[in-house]
Amino acid sequence: MKNIEPKKLCLANLPTPIQKVVFEGKSFLIKRDDFTGLETSGNKIRKLEYLLYKAKKEKADYVFTTGGEQSNHARTTAVSSASIGLKSKLFLWGKDSANADGNLFLDKIFGAELRFLSKAEFINSSKIMSDEEINFKKKNKKIFLIPEGGSSTLGIWGYINFIHELNSQLELKKLNGITAASGSGGTAAGMLIGLTLLGLKTKIFAVNVLYEKKIITEKIFTLVYDCIKEFNLKIKIDESLLEIVDGYSTEGYKNISADKLSVIKSFARSSGILLDPTYTGKAFNAYNDNFIGNKNLFVHTGGIFGAFNKRKNYLET
Ligand SMILES: Cc1ncc(COP(=O)(O)O)c(C=O)c1O
Image (tube, rainbow, N blue to C red; front, side, top):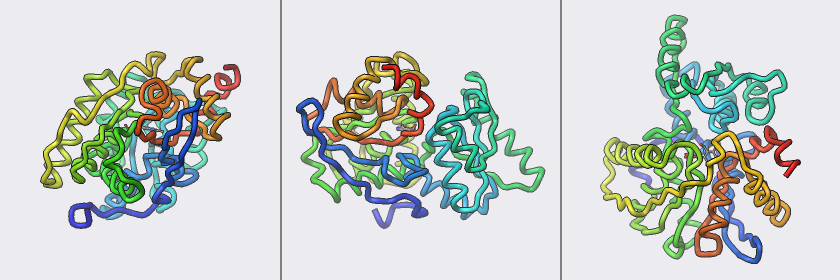
């Protein structure tokens, strides 16, 4: 890794712990990536360590990024940019609220500039950010653009490195699989490269919460092959090591069904671990139905602040 890994900042508390948990009589391991840091809890900070190193090196004034109005990635970008003296502007799919909660509340507290987008605009958010970059350039401001979820060929090094970290904590080859939520696909893409670099055959189960299956599959493999090319990695990918687990977000990305919430709550009450409504809660439902207790490790990728935005649903279930 030392010779091929790009440079990064050290913003996260690493390594994150691995915890043994029992749920409904089944014992399993959970990697607590929700413990990467308090305000920046979750998976995104791993990617931002690489991205913000580059932003600093390029002497950017502002970081632009995009996501939903409760985006954990956008919030992590706002917090971590503030921590290293950069300004941030977030392009968020959704609406502003005077009584902002969860991640949106934190975006505001940490001083991010916000622009709200319709769903149609969000699909075009890269172009919208590039256009805004031109306006900022006219004011002599240098912008560093980060795509949705921090999922670029550079950002996914966060999860290549995650696999090396995991391998130093346990005998990875003894695991059958790793299960994690998949949104923009960078976490799964990084893990697939990381496992391949180590010559391991552990399977990745990516629980799809946002895109159609075909689209997320394409996004992940595009990231994987572009990264291999850009960093000249001498590996061959076995595509069968990635399985997209679909059908666990049929209520929609921004919603969570009552039956899934009831699993989330019963898990919280038996383990002391809270899962979010958008990512980890859906991924855990998939894990509990299909993989729990079968030498398959669950990754808690964070996102707890999203639960506060859905307080009513959590309380009513
Ligand atoms: C809490 C949480 N878990 C998982 C994911 C999925 O990660 P990725 O976008 O890399 O697929 C995200 C972000 O999208 C997230 O915020």
